[in-house]
Image 1: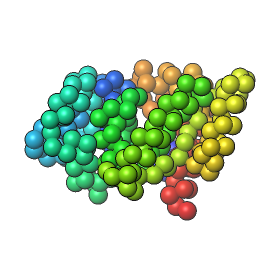
Image 2 (image 1 turned 90 degrees about the vertical axis):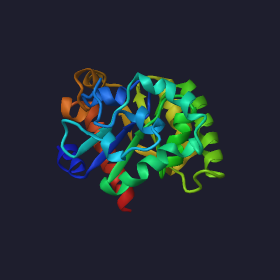
Image 3 (image 1 turned 180 degrees about the horizontal axis):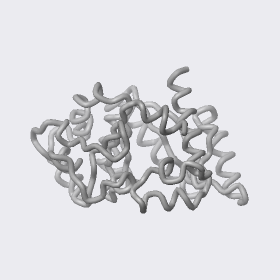
Image 4 (image 1 turned 90 degrees about the horizontal axis):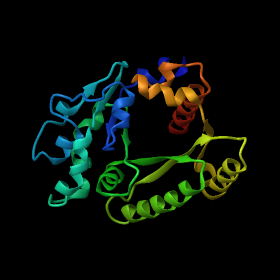
Length: 235
């Protein structure tokens, strides 16, 4: 009940910057567009009202700028644009005062779309699968963040590292968790997201896990994460 009652009383904007559009599907908006279009049109249009790209979801106080497969061509089209790495920041700036929180969901690759997200963001929340190869990807991300801070967004910080898909029955999961905590120390959230069937089922129903099955272990873990994130901001 915490997640629904307290967190969603604030206004939240989701920005789906992943061509796979999983975030859009996960809130029941697959195939839908805002009046202005999707994030693809928002990034490639010469001039448009940012508010026209915001669509309400079925969850109160939760809005989204949706994505679809057209976003795969955005990186190629944006190359010729002046200040291409700052397109998203310019687009989101007029919207920031309208929402308490803005979350940008990035693609898994470190291309121009992710670079735009890092330039636009105040901080990065890094979800990390408790697997070996995820550690290699994390090193690449940290290196990219360091370069972004060097010139494009000096104030960019790591808000926290979130351990996900954790299985405490395996030695590998425990080793990855230990190594991450040793390196990032207090930046690692105390909350760990376990492997959970309900978390996998929720997107297929177009619902956040907290609403699909609020009593599941996965939903309870994300509710605990929400509390921890808010506590960090309040500190």
